[in-house]
Image (cartoon, one colour):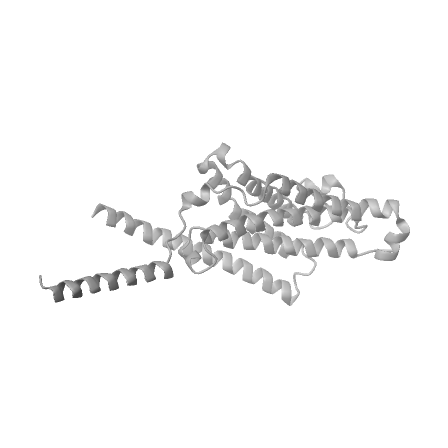
Amino acid sequence: MTDDKAARLAAIRAANAANAARAAAAHPPATDPNATDDAPPAIAPAALALMLAGAAGGALAAALVLPAVAPTISTSLLGENPKAYWYLSRSSAVVAYVLLWMAMMFGMLITSKTARLWPGGPLALELHQHTSLLGLAFSVFHALILLGDHYANASLASLFVPLGFVSYRPLWVAAGQVAFYALAIIGLSFYVKQYIGRRVWRAIHVASFATFGLALAHGIAAGSDTATPLMQGVYWLSGASVVFLTCYRVLVSLIVRPAARDTQRT
């Protein structure tokens, strides 16, 4: 081989290597599912306990302690027949629902090739955990703040026992109560994953689809502002996006996995 041919061959190889490096940088590999499974919880247990205690304590203080200890201040802030508790409950419910929706979306993006574009597998995992646990905290506040609402006339038992809330649309309120317990189990499963095993942990996470459906039904049927254009948009956008991404994941698994197995056989 002449020196000119050797030089041209070396240049071609260098160009091919550079092109491959650029392609790898532009299209990073999808996140390894095992890597995300082995990742530690994004929120430390102590921080989670503090967050949940803060949500519960703040709601109880506003609903029970403030009217009992400082009724004058409570009346001046909330009025004689306050609706502030209902507004606080409803607004925190919307925040909790949006966080659950985000948790669903980030959860389905964790091992998807879509995560190559944004936000990336590891970041999607952290966002998935943070949004689900924050949603749990807002759900706690959403329930407990109703103790201060005179129209709801709620008790701890009626708030946390399914079908125990009989004063307002009990069936649809029960859907939200079941969704709350399911969200708590799913969110706390991050912390016991190493003890229950990957298969059980993933089986628990499959229940997140039913949890989202129950939360959506609860919000639509029990929400006092469901008919407003804003909430209609939130429900349609969140429901449609979760259904779309779920169908996309199912179709990809049905098409790509058999093709990968056929490639390995050949």
